[in-house]
Length: 156
Ligand SMILES: [Zn+2]
Image (cartoon, rainbow, N blue to C red; front, side):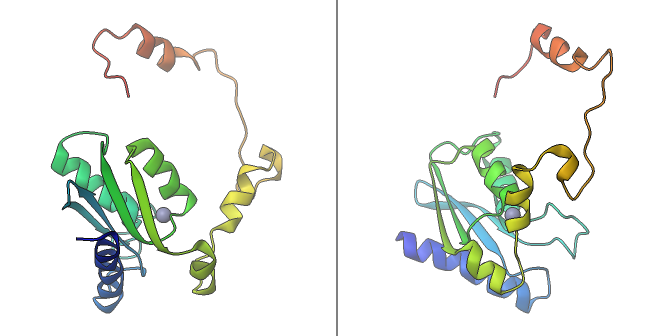
């Protein structure tokens, strides 16, 4: 299978997802050693889950298959350039490569514009669309201290 053929599988998942009325026009697969080990489609509306983007779903599927929290030596093929959320998820999953078909600009033309999220990252807290404020608490570092002192922690 070529990169192009794997990418076509992701695109077909996206098309079928719309035809089956499952969610948005996005599909992704995860490939390891030439084998598809994870698939995902957008099910945001159907599953009432704003995080159910195709790439996230494919990463969860592949990690469940591998029984591991990282996609070592894996390649993600996605029908569209990842949104900021999926971009972050991909970096946490650590595949070796990502191939995508549509750009974020083509997605924007279809009504899926995520530029505002990129813009938000650069804004100070008080200028963001969603109110965000740091609150002080004496116990704020307790989770980190507990983590650093935990004997059986799994580093990632
Ligand atoms: Zn996404």
